[in-house]
Length: 301
Image (cartoon, rainbow, N blue to C red; front, side):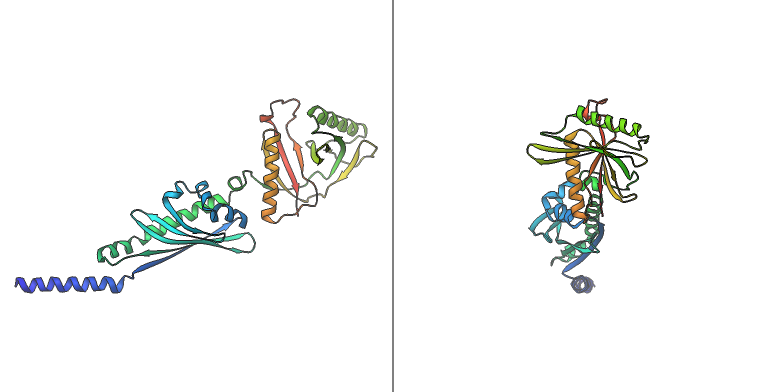
């Protein structure tokens, strides 16, 4: 009886082991994908360059070991507890700004029957880990403040008539001179019975190392006559603008303008006109530049 029972146990064990090898494949393939609305350049910079993963994935080097990286594909090993999943990360571009991040993984179940069963059962853990990583990437890439360090907003030109003046200087125009010109613009608007309609506007263009052209303007409600000092500039009413609000001095404003230019390049925008700053804060009345509020405006097509 004992021998028969033992034989039965051995037979069942053999059948079970055979079933493991027949029913459970030597490896499990996993494919995951997420749709991301971001420029391709952002994906190349922050996903295809794995040193940037730490910007959006905490402890990235403990979760994924890179073996090979190109501009369009990354291969490596995803760490899941004591096991690993051979992985290939890539992307595809659809309709210009729609990116599909893809993750192909292979979990090898091995030849040990017990480990084979356990690894096969753990495939859902691998799926959850991959989905979590892709979700992190999506959240980061779709946030302009993370990718470019600025919050870009779409707006429309509402003040289409501006009274303007220009100043040439050998260096950046001193703040006192800027507000002296603004004061003169306001006085001329009053003289010509025009009402000012918004914040003062400024553009500074460096022509060469010793020549700066500063254009200053104020929005007004109607056209007025021009002279040698002042002229009317008409903007296209309701035209598209990209805007960024900046808190801080000239260094932060310059950085934000550079990042906005990069944002425009990555997203395929072109500009029919020069950008300008709206001086929300009266900088003479607020000498602490860290408290300045400036709205950068860039007309775009």
